[in-house]
Each structure stands twice: as C-alpha cells, then as structure tokens.
Length: 254
Image (cartoon, rainbow, N blue to C red):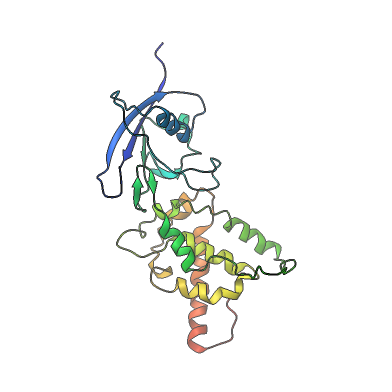
C-alpha cells in the first residue's frame, strides 16, 4: 500500500520587499497531526514536492494551546490558529497563507505591531503604583466580573482584524480588539480612573466611527468574545462622553 501523505501549498515570501510565491510540500501522514506539526516536519526536512531542497518555512508560535495567539494564519481561506487546526479535519491540499492585514516579514510570519500600538493608544491597562503594597483590590459585582472574564480571554491573535473589511491599508480603523479591551479596563474598579481618556481615544480617528458593522469579527473570534456587544457598549459610552465633554457635566459615564 502507498504511504499516506499530506499535501500543503504554502504562500512564501523571503522578506518584506520580495514578491510572494506558492510552494508545494508533501509530507508523511501521522494521525492527530495539527498544522504546526506539519510545518515542523517541513522544517526538519525542507524539500518541496518536486524533490528540491529549499529554505525552511518560518512562522510564529509559542504556547501550542490556543492561548498566546501567535500562530494565527490563513488556513484554507480561514483565519485561525494553526495549533488547533487538525490535519484530519482539513481539505487537501492544505493552503497556508499569512494574514493579509499585517505586513509580512517572512513566509507566514507577520508584524502585528499596529495591533499592540492601538492597545497603547487606548491605554489598555490598569495604571497602579507598584512601589508600595496597595492591599487587596476592590471587589467587582459578580455579573460585572463574569463580563470582564469573557473580555479578558482575548489573546491578541489578530483574527478579528484579519476578517474585518474596514481594517485595511486605506483605513485607520483600529478594529474590534482594542475597542473590546477598552470595555474590559473601563469595567475595572481601578481602571475606571482613566475611563475618559480611553473613550476619547475611541472617539478619534480610526475609532468607533470607522466600524462598518459587518460583524465578521464576532463570528471569527476563536475565544467567542462578544466583540459586537463591546462595540455597541462603547458607542453608547462614547455618546455619553461626548455630551459630558460638551456641557462640562460631572455626570459619571457608565
């Protein structure tokens, strides 16, 4: 009997300035392999389907447990994590491409810096002074805690940005991910201190007004985060913030 094999077509690119091209690989099949395991097999023996020696394929990975978000790529036309993409469930030849939303560094590696820059822009953190013991933090109501827990599952994988038609080279839209993180940190009892700053960041260029409400993000999120609910909630808060800023009211935005 012929040995069972796996066929992969990988979009490759030597550096950010070079032209992309497709290269086909055929590797031995093993049960329960994921896409990462297939890429590791190619890395160990970088020979393409024509039997020619080639350079090892490069990609990003870290946890291999769908927690870090580093191994995101487009697999058979769908943006997802390659560590959770099981070979047996994929149609062959398996086509692997880098996410198009981010600049390609090499092969399947992309530069996700703009996603992290947007998190800095909206101050997606809780500012505390760590020079002395603050004691236990304030307690959150259970319903609010449950909402915050769902939002905290974000692993900055970039999939929601990849599937959003409004995140492209002709737009400054920051995407659903930082908007949802604003909601998370504005819910935090201590994070609320910087609530106005975060909302003003969302009200600026590339913020909430740029969302086209395609709702692709919530469908694609691997963690099931309610991204469209977050966008709606932040739109409401931004409207209150607008009136508060205009009238100079001391009204507390919820």
